[in-house]
Length: 462
Image (cartoon, rainbow, N blue to C red):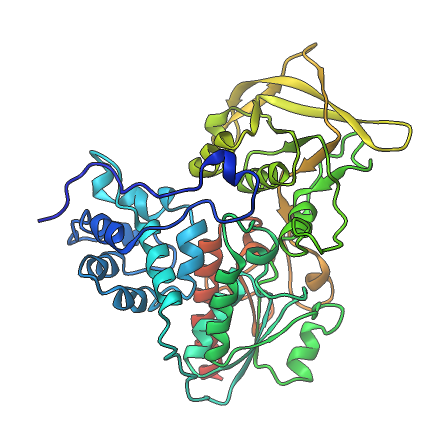
């Protein structure tokens, strides 16, 4: 008999007043007993609606039934038939708006904790890894992957399983892309990312770091001089956006990308690392997405006394995951919704010493369907801060498209691809944030999988 409890098995977490002072993982994970109990809530529906909500098509009811039976390694193998990064996805995917939103248990209660079970299975495998990954027999074909974020890793893994000799070219000194530089340790421990990448290496994938494609090598050189028969561009969207308001050049103004990179990749939070980063008393994080939540929660952990989220719409319009907003509030982050910066103030030394904001109200819906924020005249006030972190979005770096013949982009700087993820140049494919702009990890992985299928067909047809 299924477990008909209307609520998910609660996830154990660190207490807010403890975790907001450390960078250890917030969620502690299920025990085997908790995982089995949660798995028995799955009804194993005939039509499997949850699968339709997964961008990579994980066989969700099948893996959950294996968990319920106590076959945790079997569940891991079932997930990895379609998802090469379960340890990552179980932690950072927005399951509540994807697979779990389709779960029929959510009609009269809470959906099955699909993400929590995926995380448990991945962690169990990592702790008990039998080390049975084997490199596929080479098919004699070479493919280059630019970028080692979720899109690139997904594409590389799919191709390696089919016998392709895959080389990943990563611009940073550490692979992982946004998984390494963008998502904090307390949400995604870097040992998880490292473990997933080591798995790809066992499949035969080569990873070359400090390789800025467009500078060190061009796409043309990869194809014409190095013999790669196809190239996948998964270089992400790491170019930060700013508001173009007065004071953005002051000392103490960061893009969220820079701030998070200094903390996550360059370990500014650890003693013994000489990473320059400002230790401030009060910080304003501008934006309402997951990146804004990450930056605000990092600032709190770096010892900032007052941390504000400044967002021009209401909380209901925030694109951040509900869980991240909930955790941020628990940790003492203050939310100033329906507020928008108008200028940043500086002292005589060129340092931030305040930010002027104006109060907003919601007007008519815009093209996205969200109600447009409208400024309330005369409602300006000064927020007392000495640091400002802009988390209002990113766009793809133009380096690759401006150094590669035949690869076109749209007005937003995103690469143009067809349904097969092929760019406007034959043999060059792209996916993830380089195509969509900043989006989710799982959508990038789905694009990488689609591109791998297309590259396989392209090379076999030559």
